[in-house]
Image (cartoon, rainbow, N blue to C red):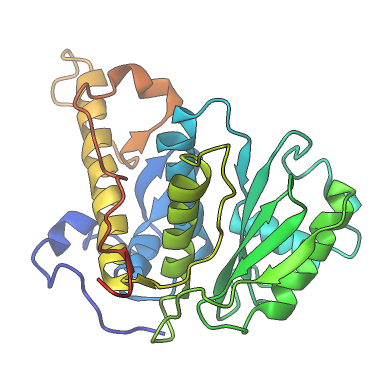
Length: 288
């Protein structure tokens, strides 16, 4: 469903590859190849699996990497879907990450039931599993739309982990007011819960997983995601220009998308970036 929203009102659309076809790559970021279709959906539509996977990849490399002692897993949408659809989750043990030393797992949940169409479905929600507490917290922005899917995934994960998981529907999870922002809510809540509840928590205090009184501004969230993409695309272009040989005069411009990866980390800018710093206006107290 398309809402017609354009976060920058056409002012910088030329920066987002308008000359590209939907399946053309716009940015390669570690293991994710982001296409123009993915970027366009972040602008004004229902988020693709790949767009959410990109956001998880960014959180892993830009935030989780700062906390080497953390043991948190961000499961990709394709793996969450595979887990939900597989009758015997133990058969996936080799295909999924090793959870034996993990404390928490984030899983994007989709209501797609068609195993032949992995990009199907009409709604996203977020499941946060605290392995150490034996609890699955479900955040649904159109509650209780994905209740059955989330419970099923939690049950499958319980079998895989070999321990019971108590399911808790977060009744005060912020609610969307249209039919296309569910994926954005998943990305923003994942970032908030990761950065503000888990990574910076006081180990001596009990962590509240409630979102009571919190509101999510999906419009600002989409802008943040697009700014993040543009930031890394520009950084990738800068790295590519630095790595190109000065003797390759007259060579044709590379047809591959700008790339951020481990192989060019030595060219990382010395300029400190706060691209993922928490914007308090995106997830705010309702009273503010």
